[in-house]
Length: 391
Ligand SMILES: *Cc1c(COP(=O)(O)O)cnc(C)c1O
Image 1 (cartoon, protein in one colour):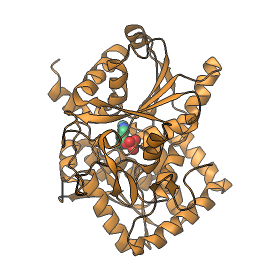
Image 2 (spheres, rainbow, N blue to C red):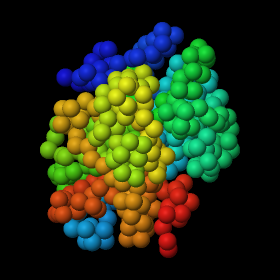
Image 3 (cartoon, rainbow, N blue to C red):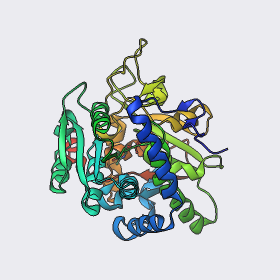
Image 4 (cartoon, rainbow, N blue to C red):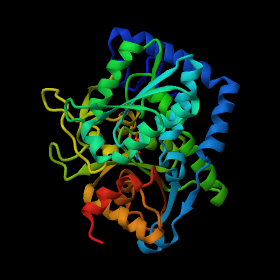
């Protein structure tokens, strides 16, 4: 059995909880995507771009010094080396081509850390598409270099001042725009969340991370790693990294942001502390109050600052296919400094959560082969890191 089912459900999670006006658009998208998947010319074009434009395959790097220091055999899948500095481009290239394939000329997107906005604006420039990006005002302030990049790339950036002025509010605005302009516009959703078919489309475009990793590790050792670890915001880098390992002997571990601690408003650990509910068009684990209000969430890294999570992760949690854990701001910052000063790699604060969990539990993983998905590079986080750390 492969998931989702024909109605877009992963077990009880997922679905298409949207206004009537969007059901047609989503059905049209699903049909177009199924053609796209089996269209040789489109698939070749995507593979060419992933290779010559984005820089795939990304390296699988064995961190010798850090392994020696921790007693864990640590490998990093280097999505930080992908063009634009994070895994996001895998998805935006795919959906950008899909937009052209559907005959649409405009893309809109939401962004939190700004990475998805940059990756979307990049693809818009590459493919000659009009581009509008919705971004929470709070995120605009903490991610100014990415805002400047988007503008330079020719995108219009619209500040969102409703709610907590972060990612979930930007998604609401993008959905409103899509309802108004659905004939000409594709909503290029940035994670494995949202209504069907987005969780499947985004997972499929990110699957390349795990399939490459599997091949690379097998070419080296003729076997599988013991663990694959990734940070979970909406869950796209983790889903793409885990997908080819689900059901194998490999232990998949998703790390959520515990922020300042696991009290209400202090974190964004939706799978660890949430309950099933509907947000942005699908049923999944969600941080909500007992009367169903979406809770305010917090993480030092804007890319993880989201109260929900993709429905396939909820399914993997319930079926014990993936183990979900947490890492605090402080642990992530420490991991970020450690990787920087031991290996000369400055990781994104999001990715630092995955490493932070392993460093805090290194005894448990002693001698194991652990691959961490380095979802992005940390240049965008320099100001945040330097504010917290005395050098
Ligand atoms: C956006 C982002 C994330 C979180 O998004 P997912 O959909 O959970 O992958 C993680 N790492 C980096 C570097 C990001 O830019």
